[in-house]
Image (cartoon, rainbow, N blue to C red):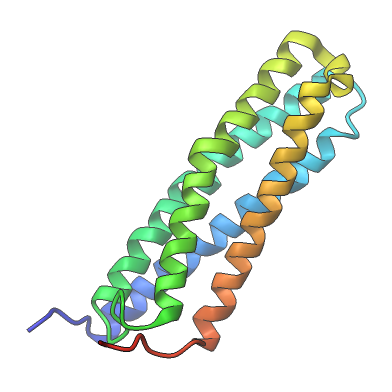
Length: 168
C-alpha cells in the first residue's frame, strides 16, 4: 500500500507549493521586466544596478522557488490520487517544470552573467554592443517563453485537461 497524505498535510503541502510557484512566477516576471528596463538605461551605473537587482532576484526568487515547486509537485503527485504518470496534465507539468529549470540553469544564468560582464567592462556603451543586444534578445525571448510555460502549467493545474494516460 502506498503512502497517502491526510487532508491537513495535503493542504500544507499545497500551500507551500502555491507559494513557491507564485514566487517563481513573480521572480521570472521581475527578471523579464528588469531585462527590458536595461534597454532604457541612462548611464553605466544604472545598468550595473539593474544587473545587480537581477542577480538578487535570480538567487532568491528563481532558483529556490523553482526547486521547491518541483519537489512539492512531485510529492503531491506521488502522495495523492493523481500519481506521477496517471494523467497527462501531471506529466506535462513535470516535463515543463524540468524544462524551465534547465533553461534557467544552462542558458539564462549564463546569459545574465555575460551581460553583467559586458556592462562592467564597457559601461554604458555596452548597450550599443552587438553581443549585448544578441544576448539581451535571447534573455527576453527565453524569459517570455518561461512565463508562458508557467502560466500554462497554472491553467492546466485547475482545468486538468487531456484525461488519463491509457494503460496498454
